[in-house]
Image (tube, rainbow over all chains, first blue to last red; front, side, top):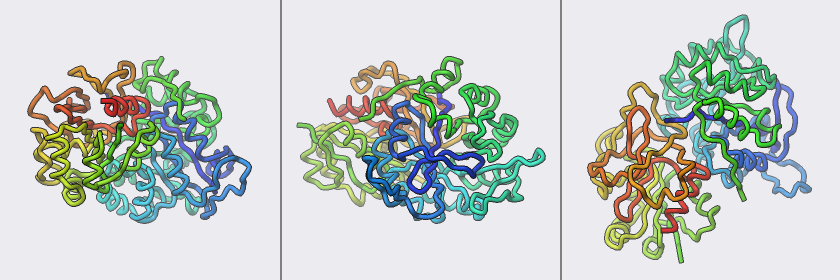
Length: 269
Length: 203
């Protein structure tokens, strides 16, 4: 039987891995490759790696860390894919077909498209035709306002007037393989996933949903798996701050009979 | 002395297969050169994407008569991964009807998953139907990463050594003499994938 997945999200901002809160405040978490190695050892099911840099400067401007300074995002992904033997979804700054091609070439298995999908939904269709649906993850950030859900535009940093329920149908029809949904209101808060929203939305579409935003402890993950049909849960902060986080989360879920992969610890050289 | 040849025809997951073989510390080349195909001890045919595109590229880049001679006549160890397994079939029915390598009797058809969504993306387990060395030390962890919508429907049942179910049961590992076909991605299946690849390379 197919397992439900636990997916750590890594945010890269100008060469450093960061933590985010409300899509606004960022805190440095360290080297972009070391963290991936750790998450591999804790047997994560997949990784989502997002480049949220505002410009093209990735130099960490330090030589005392014992790691090479990488000049661009693709070099970082190349190094990341050498220490991880699981699927990686790469997102950020994808505006054209060739951007996808470049990311797949250095070891990404799937790409997450965000801004371009909102402004030019046809891009979802074009890219899934070119690379296959399995390769295209549409990533949407949503904002809850007076019990309605709207898409948040990361580029302008504004809430749009696009209703997420309407848009999501289009995403599926245009051939996306999966959909990654992140709550802006709950980002970095640790107050639990938006269960009502995910319950509603997972009834509306057939493609796998990756839920994100608000995980504060392992119970929050159990809760959303128990109450909704989402295929995967994703989280950033909670997986970076605790030693063996993914292993412990999985163990918690496994012991509560959630259909996840058996928890394991690996040694990566 | 073992030497692995990862067959190069422009498949998208060559890099990931390379990363794994390198990590496991084997001597390898990524090549479509005749000499490399002749001199190696193990051949791996990676694959991702459609049947039609893979076959087009294989016909274009790989010296098929040399490969056939090594695999079918000299019975060199061979493993096809994902679409690299599917192209072993006689025909593929993805977006039309296309001829495969024809080394395995059977055709590649879309999974009949009832109401489950396609592609079949994620970790799923293998049910062993025939004991084989490829599963050595895999009693505990038999979950692998799948990413596909089509599967090889094999005519000769005793070539099926493991099945997986997703709305329907399909062949996830096949073996015919020296030929293995693996529907999932061992290069993306962490520990289980490493053990399986190691088992193959130690045959």
